[in-house]
Length: 201
Image (tube, rainbow, N blue to C red):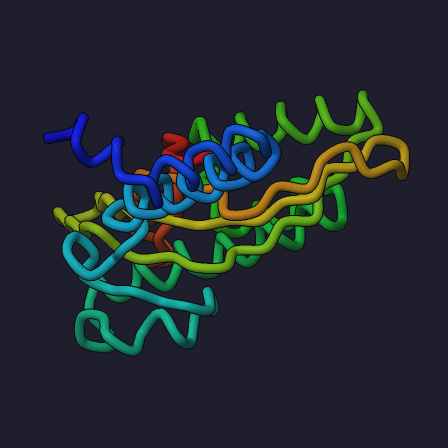
């Protein structure tokens, strides 16, 4: 059957024409590859199935639109994570970890990790200009004075060293687990640890 199809004069002429033009075959191969990659990544980037709260613009106010009832502990920890993400953007632009300090427990590993990372950036003369383009809450668990928030986040980031742009990355997709603790004296939640897994780097 395949042999009969290939023997058709029209198809034979088309194949001959393509073989005489390898650049056309290359472009067609690239386009088919991009199309197949998009099809493969589409379920991963779609937040409809696993995400209970999808937010297209990551501001604390918008994070409350489809979330647990206002004033609940679940809403409080979601709001704190949203505010922390905004603070992390300001910290990156300013090159100072202390912009994140109000949201991090001083004895937690998240604060120690942030200080170490900003020390490394200062040593290299490295600066970042990040943007959180999309995020969603996958899971929220509150147990008395402890809480866990799991998110999926999409970031863009431009990295410069001594003022020279070294890389500009778009669509960095991460899965993040935030562990939080409530401080009884102030009734405020603080992030103790942040675990980030890159899905698309």
